[in-house]
Length: 113
Image 1 (cartoon, rainbow, N blue to C red):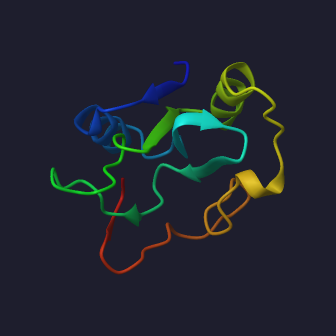
Image 2 (cartoon, rainbow, N blue to C red):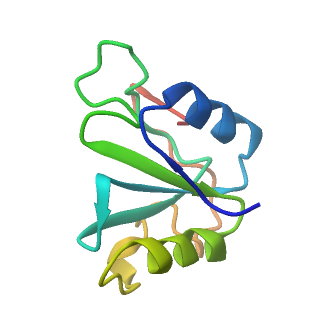
């Protein structure tokens, strides 16, 4: 399945993550750009922004997400859709990067999404 860009659709994004724990998620701005595209494992626990009253929901206001079942699909989406995107170490979460073999990182007050 190719990558999906989630904008203003927290319920769809949350459902995808719950159904694809082995997939990948990229945090990016609402209008993705090369300066901010951070790739996480779908199992990584990120700050909980699922409240309808959240200032920064998962896929609304200034943020969006890109999801895919494979790392290659997330990266290809970025190359195809973000002008000037060049993959570097800065694009990978330092706690759950693809080479990390430990358990999912859990931070207080966070959820899997």
